[in-house]
Amino acid sequence: MKKKALFLTIVIFFAVVLGLTSCDKQASLEGVIAEVGEEKIYREDFDISFFLNPQYAIRTPMKKARQSQIIFLVNQKFYYLAARESDLEEDPLIQNHLNYIEAREIIRFYIQKKFLDQITIDDQEILEAYARLGTKVRVQHLFTESPEGADSLYARISRGETFESIAQQIYRDSTLRESGGDLGYIGFGDMDPQLEERVYSMSPGEISQPVQSAYGYHILKVLDFQQNVQFQETPEPVKIKTIKEILQTRAADKQIRAHLNDLAGNRKIQVSNRILDVLVTETMNVMGNRYDEVNLFQPPIYTGDLNRIELRLQDILDEILITFGEETMTVEDFLDRLRQMPPLHRPYLKTRSRMTQAMIDMIRNDLILQEARKQNLQKDPEVRESIRKITEELLADEFQKRLYGENFKKGSPDQWKRISDIYENVKTETDTAVYYLKLYEDLPVSDSLMAPNPIQLFIKNRYVW
Image (cartoon, rainbow, N blue to C red; front, top):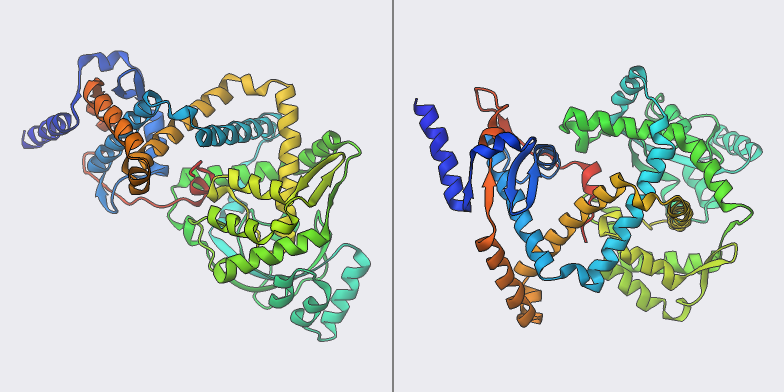
């Protein structure tokens, strides 16, 4: 009886604090665990948020963790409703963000439906990949485009020359020259499958014979192995999902490459080496040593960095950086496109090769987007629903930032007062209900502890500006 009384007390307490009510109509709302006005929170969306965007403290009892999460999601609905009421979606900056989201989601669904959904991954492949997921390997490598060049490099290594001395001679990229071809710690899914297969079978200090990849030929040296900390305590379903996505993408890689070649036709991507070298140099001057302190949960490059790079490149902003058939991309175009991305989506631009790959990826995305729009994929109900959910999350986040941001409050006091009044009115006037029995119905008798873990895959793919 005491447990039951305590449970009812908790439910009533949170209902009073939030202005929430629970009612018998929950039985007719299949899958709905809360309502905020006309907006509904479904159990499926709650579970995703609970594990991938945790809003509860470390070592929190399960029941309390769920309470914290549902409070967070209800408040998100308030922010979203207030954002709509204040016409935040009409803001040019928000429109820019929404355009980026729509394009990215269309591209993602196009690749998923045309290629990835056609590929089946068996259990044996998953088991083999699982063992590699928890380990990263530090690799040095020497690269050449021809088998003859690879044989020559291997012969030099066999005669006693070091990776460091050879790298000084063969690489244009200053970082690879100075590091002796050190790629740092690489994880499962980060490299060409042929290279990954080889390095994970090697021992520290071992040097490979020439290994062919999709890009050319490589001589590899394994320096060290270490645990992949980010994935050690990741929930098992997320690990399996990550592995399947990587394996599906690899299996589809040749098909995707061939498809892109068909879309490109006779057009070739040409990069101006002179302009590229200047861009890489100025990027490294602005970034300094920060690229040596990689943090998965911080952007590879901030908007302020891009603005500083642009100031240093005033004389060449109109110069053509890349040509693709009759289309061109200037230095200014490239920096603008990087600015449009959510900071965590931006690529690392530390080396010449990574900078080039970022530009190539932009053109490839443009090709796929054009083809997807020709097929009206933007009207697909699944695409529209995904965009709707992300839009709602974006508007809620942006409204919250403006509501509680001191810079916005000081810089635009009249606008801040307007959105503050709208928010308070929405909270007061909106009927809200949380169905706690549904929220707790699958809890074990003994309340376990939750410990939220940051998940790299989710963090890297959220739309957060």
